[in-house]
Length: 100
Image 1 (spheres, rainbow, N blue to C red):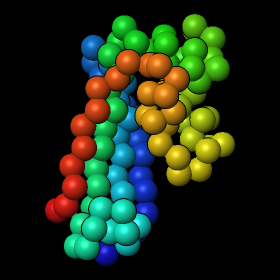
Image 2 (spheres, rainbow, N blue to C red):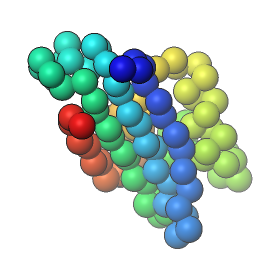
Image 3 (cartoon, rainbow, N blue to C red):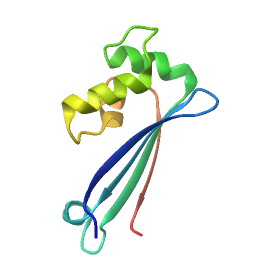
């Protein structure tokens, strides 16, 4: 099985932004328990909250939130940007799933 973390940033047609992640392998099993080696998650920032995300990421109002998210990730390794934004007070929805 492949191991690691993958994160993608997607802009929806209605202006929402999704941070989609997947963790695979032994690190998941250590945290979630024996036999659970896959964890998927998505943060959804509604279009109305994108400005708050831009501000939390240190951007200016005209900055592209996807570019800011990618820059944040480049300096924070495998950290989850959704957790950072949630802790900064950006309103978001969250979804997750464990297992195959």
